Length: 165
Image (cartoon, rainbow, N blue to C red; front, top):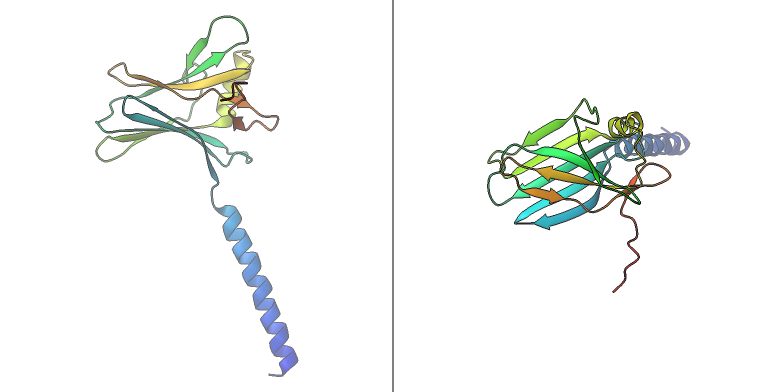
C-alpha cells in the first residue's frame, strides 16, 4: 500500500466516522426543562421533548417525598380579560396520554404530544394567550406550573411578567 492510497483510505474513514457521529448525535432526543415548581414538598417539572420536530411532546413530571396516588392533568387557559378556563387533557381530546409511575410511587410522569394539545385548542376555538399546567392527585392536592405561552414556532416559553426586582 502506497502512501497516497493510505492517505485516501484515512480520509475516507475520517469522513465516514464524522457522518456516522452526526447521524447518531441528531437521532438522540432533545429535552428542554421549561419550568420547575415546588409546592407542599412536591416538585412539578415541565419538559419539552424534541420541540422542533413533528413528534414534539410535553412531559409533566411530579416528584414527592410521599407516595403519589392517581394523577390528573389539566390545562388552565388565562385570557386577557375574563375567567380562567380549566380543561382536562381528555376534554381537549388528547388521545395518547402516557402515565408512568416509579417503583415506589414517588415519581410519576404524564407525557403527551404537543400536536394533540394544539389540535384540542383549535377544535375548542380557544385563543392560547397564556396558560399553565395543573396537576391534581387523589387527595385533592393541586400544583400549578408557571405561566406559559407559545412562541411563533409553537415552542413553550415563559412570558415576561414585567416585574423586576
